[in-house]
Length: 455
Image (cartoon, rainbow, N blue to C red; front, side):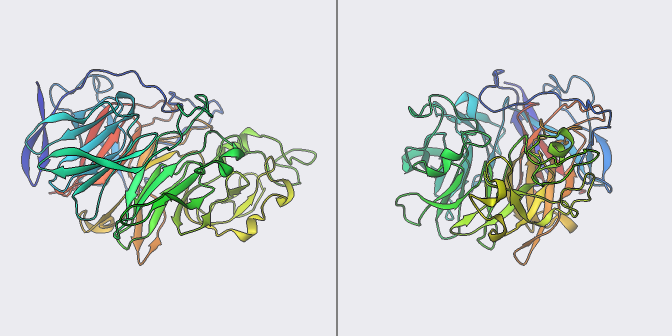
């Protein structure tokens, strides 16, 4: 089997080449988009200090899209290389031994990239495995399948089935849903006290019945330390795929907001002659709603589907500047006209947010591993939009995190989208490694990248 180098502590280590190509399914829309409005598509969210570099591709890993040179945007002096090819690679986690686990939901497996150069399936025959997390002591691996969270004893690079932390989670195979489940992939995180958190996405865009389901969908569930029934921890979380616990123990979620949001104000929008209330206006949809990066606390409600984060500094005004910090919520004109279902002003604003339709997926924290301005913060894989024109660019984002406060979004890696809107990759997750680099999964390119700071 062909190997390709991947660094660890300055030494060359091998990561093996492609698994058999798999057909993507059940992961939501993943189109190649183009800007039809005539506006240039952005290549990154906030990339003023980044520089273009050619992605380094070792021999044997140069199948499409790397059969031609690809250019990315990274901080000055950093490099980006392809470390492994894993079709449909999704979330990732480091083992206590310094091995990288990558989930492949469509193949039903978790892949291990070991420091000895081996790439092998660690677990197979699972039901759409997605989220991966270890217990605080490193002895238990949690794998979030679409219908449960399984537990595995971790020792010596092996995962031995040990039980189930959460069972009976809803997915497309649930009899009452009859295959209608748009956000069935689950994510999992563990707190310093051993509590387990699992995301349960909504079945659709505005499926209000999710709120009264058992367990509630569009929620984050919590299993107490030592085990027990999973209980709702936060609700109104449309699709909190990004789920991570900060070094201070705070639980954070990066959330995919609703699509095709109607204009929520009883006034004209732009050049309209009458009230635009309740109308689905492409220009408004492209910029709304903001997608939250929210600190979750017991009982918090993020508002979906009744309330949407509105980042406009001049609410309802076309072309308004946006402030993506402390974003207030406004009533959804379709689901909550006049606030009759829920008074959105009673809900806490979103601490930070991504631009509308960014589609944040993986979320992780890093502390003391990366240099300089990236030493302490959150890393997010931004998959990029389908419901915006021009399309939001895929990227890896960094948010500074100090004293429990989340700073504004910065682009750490961009350039996956060109000004026409065409894309060659879509990051899913980014995790800082023990070698001081960041490892990034890309389900569209079928790759794991190594982002390395200057030596």
